[in-house]
Length: 619
Ligand code: ADP
Image (cartoon, rainbow, N blue to C red):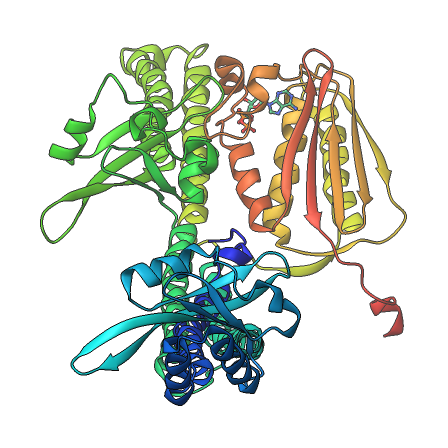
């Protein structure tokens, strides 16, 4: 279609050629016929003109019949001299014996009395029949007409041959006039052909231009450009065709637009779906894949295009395409590896035409990793809670059994036993309280009571309390740990909106951990600094540190690096989990940096917005 049309293949050329050929052939036929006819008529007229009149003939017959040859020849000569015809070049009179009796040529009188050598004359005398021919004289290159007529004298009923008249006339004038006419005719024909050709070119241009326009427009339509319009030159068939092409262009554009709009709608639906969608042809090869599916399966849609859905989902071997077509149940696809977990549920349905013909498959992928994780965590949580409660309860039961078995009377062990049950009870209450507050945060019922607080002041206040504890501990508890708190604060006042009680709980918990998991005499460094839009609070200890593999789990519920040790120190394993929830409710982040055996640093970052001007100074 895009191939350039060769000029000689174009309708334009063909029409012009046909026109020209038609004209030429017509002129050829008409011309040939006309010239032929003209020639015939002219020659006929010429013959009539040059033929000797019957009067002359009779005179000649009379003289040929005379016995006085001399007188007769003289008479014949006079008669011949009187012949007045410009075209007649020679008239010869021959008697029956073949003797030339007279010649019109004045310079050729010598031949009179001689026998003729002309075989044609002899033939006429012999046959007694007239003879005529057109010849071409090579000596002077001119056409001639030769006529030999036998002469008869009528006596009574019989005609006696007395001789013959040989007449030679130049045909040049006849041929000249025919030639002139032919030249005029050919010239006229050529001029007419040239005009005809020009006309043909004009007409064929008029026909081919709209066709050419339509050709261009249809190629543009094919390339998706609907902007052009074919010019409609008239109301004839071509005009109607042009109009039809214009209508077609509008229709195609509308259809294209609506199918594009449909496509866009489909694309936007697919790309906004939280579930992955894969559509295949009836051989199970992928033809559409939305972004979610591509992310879930970690495969580029372009790469997936045309591949079998069995390979894409990595279920070849487990299922065949027939299984998927016949039995559209849900399939669980586990894509988990060492690093991350991913479980998808795949639901299949058929793309079927009204006739029942199956033209493909649609697979909807639903990521159930999170759901499975939540289910598992819930199960783990219930088992953790039961376990956490059973351990203290079992130990309490044994102490209480011992007491009821008589140990209560033993003044040495009884107070210790009672103290243990009291501690365990308290730990359980603490755990239950922790669980309750976690559950409140989970369900969203726990609300923050935000107030604008000077963080430097609040942090100092909390740390002061730990310093105080150190002093009081020093006084009454001998086994209490020693530690030093180092403060490294920014000088700027950092005002942030926080729920003071909950925030204090978080810092308390981290401080307590720092003390709990540090050896005696450690230094705890507390820092406070701000970045462009965050405040960062950190607490570093010189304690046990956290093994690398556990760092990621440190904020999980009930997670403890060393369960026995934590429990012995009254830990519930929920402190950091609660801290994380609280900080996240504030829109902040909590994380840890730790080197096992060297110490850990806990960081809390909170969103911070610097107030323009000093709000409080102005008041
Ligand atoms: P717990 O009540 O057991 O202290 P947390 O949630 O506060 O519970 O802490 C979870 C676990 O994290 C602890 O059991 C401990 O193993 C580890 N951990 C927390 N803080 C530190 C720290 N500063 N140094 C070392 N390990 C720590």
